[in-house]
Length: 347
Image (tube, rainbow, N blue to C red; front, side, top):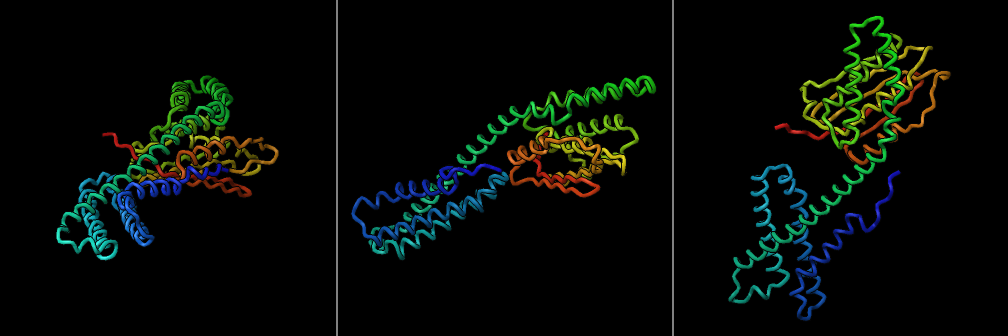
């Protein structure tokens, strides 16, 4: 269970502190002279309108900038600031300080420009707080991810592709070299690719999805050599747009699901099978792993460390952008993962 976030780190606490600070700084000139409670209330309402326009800018206009639609952001931002300044001027003119606007030397256009500057400054200040807070959270998240990866390196050695797998594969290679020597070079290359990929990518934050899927393909090919014709194995990649090379994923997440399927599916009473389908469309990866339930007499003890590691990493790296669902039936074990991936432009 995730630890509860401390109250002083919550977003609303930052908002309250920022609101009070900007309110005091913005309205300080009005408080130099004695003011009534009604004047204080009017200034508070005026400032809340000013603050609200900054919030609306953040949620409805700022996303254009994040999406790199610079022209749309510039035009909509200017129009919105002018509209907000007009609203503030109207509120000031008719309610906050109507006596001021009865003076002969008052120039409405000058006051309108003042409201424009006020809206621009408040919006810039609010966005600065938002960007600083997001940067701080991303930095903290990255540091946690790096620390977690370092702490879990030893666990991965046991949870994924443990040494017994490689020992078994070397024995299988020896047998193949005696019966079908022509196939030996190909299998050695696959095993070499497996070892190289794991050693080179365990400590990386992200890897290319196409390489990760190729790693799984090699692993399954070696498992076929190990279990022979005893297990029905299917591995299908559905990527109609052939776009896997344009996406990135945290390394060695998917392989744990695959290894668990082979490790905990052995049966002699029913059909032994492992079926894996990977579907990629519009940056959403769907991985479905179905395997036979093991016989009671053949069940191996499981610490669950592999799935626990996956859940922890998914929550840390893809919080709000993934779904991991596990269904256990009498004859079949299903694991379904849905993951939103980051697009990588090679140009």
